[in-house]
Length: 154
Image 1 (cartoon, rainbow, N blue to C red):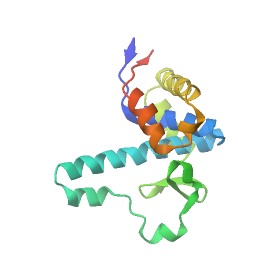
Image 2: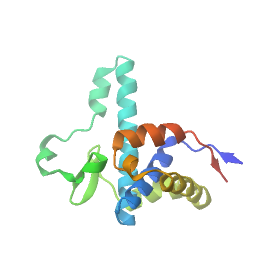
Image 3: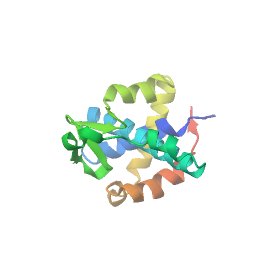
């Protein structure tokens, strides 16, 4: 039976396994996964607000780097188009860790469903050519968009 799982934990898991396949250690891959999901959630909400003519609200939601811009590292996670701060992915004004990933993917849905989400993501990433894994836009369009509404079988 398929369980309805929203897109956020699916994106987090998919990006985790993408990062693992690209050689990142598991704890960092989990942090990248949740940071990528946050990044795309911000983009989606910004786009929605702008479409609705709510530019002021969109500006409040936009990631503010402000005075931190000089201290952010854009090379460490360049492949993911993520900033880093003190070696951790940084999005929306905060850093992300493996604990954030576990909270959003495993604890939120329970161990069984969380592991099924991860199995789904692992399977997709294993089937994805490395060329797509290394290209943020191609990965988004050719892997994520195609599979984001797949049911999670439990």
